[in-house]
Length: 198
Ligand code: GRF
Image 1: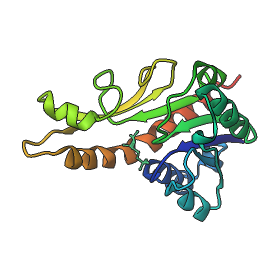
Image 2 (image 1 turned 180 degrees about the vertical axis):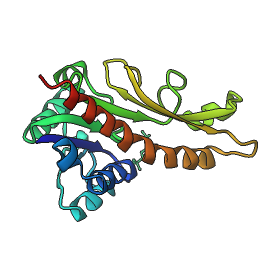
Image 3 (image 1 turned 90 degrees about the vertical axis):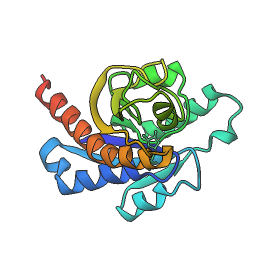
Image 4 (image 1 turned 135 degrees about the vertical axis):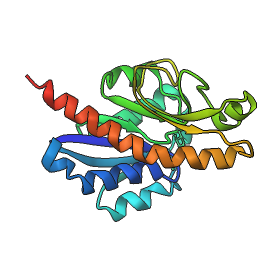
């Protein structure tokens, strides 16, 4: 069984979309994959209750308890590794990860970013897209490398930017696509991994 560990920091709507897709599309049966755990760096992340309601193991590793990024990432990796992850999924996980953490999960660490990368890495992507006069915006699922919001692109979806959009209305339109794209991209990754099995 391939274990998927999802890291969140907040509401966890992307995590919930992945969990729903795994149940609906029978990932265990079709891909031999299951969501093994949801881990947050914040104890009050709303997504933790959603995960528990689906019978998924949860854990909290508060980044504030650690003096350095390296110490936090070490502690986080220890908890992640207790679930023997085949894939680690960042879903609204709002911490920059150290090269040590990224290297440990190289090739099996993915992220979702609410812009059409390589445009607008970092924060405030929707406001920046509006201010740049973009006519389209969107979302990217990519493999994580040591450079923030870079790495090989696995999937993208595009939405229009409408004339009266605010950052909030655009974010809502993009988020609806995130919920479709992320489960699809992970299912594609699982399928690909299966077909490359020796
Ligand atoms: C999403 O827009 C994600 O792309 C970004 O943060 C947001 C998290 O939302 N990195 P949620 O926690 O999945 O609801």
